Length: 108
Length: 121
Image (cartoon, rainbow over all chains, first blue to last red; front, side):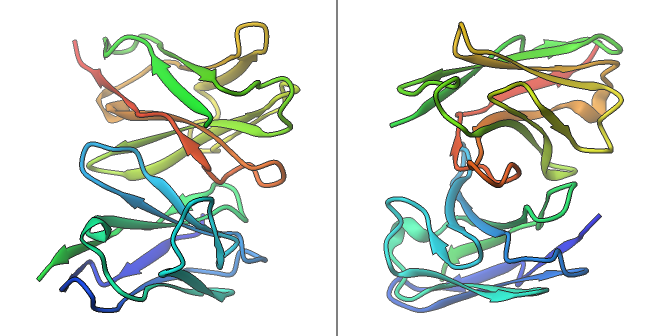
């Protein structure tokens, strides 16, 4: 089973700042089948990024994904108030498909 | 926009069977060449992929749950279902149904709102 480790656990930033979230896999899963999700309290996760760098429908371009093999990054160029939430990465290249433990993005 | 809604009992006694249904609206399971799946989220284990079913009925399960899980699809009702047998307290979680991709089955593109299932006697 591939383990995804997200860092940092908590990120404290202000609106307008740039956020960089990391996701590292315990081994390569043979492709760029890496997704990022955002989850707000009491809501289901929402797909942001698929294929490591593709933006899902309706996702603003301030969200971007990059990386390959075992190291992936989600960047939010200029934080908006609605971006403060928990972010999860998921690999869907090797079964069982696994999630990271999450990064909480909080307002500083 | 595609909508998914989970339904089923919120309380299940151990070691009974957990049964949930996902109703799909604003879209058809049978005319959509996509994977449909179940995931769950608990404080202890985080987000966990349970399994997927293709619109044709082919299934794919998390190996850790395979012996207890059945996912099926009913295209006439535009629904798909989850059965998890021999539940324990460790199965207490928010269960989500989701639509996957047309090529990749593990990704969750659209999610239901989730249903909390508590396993307790």
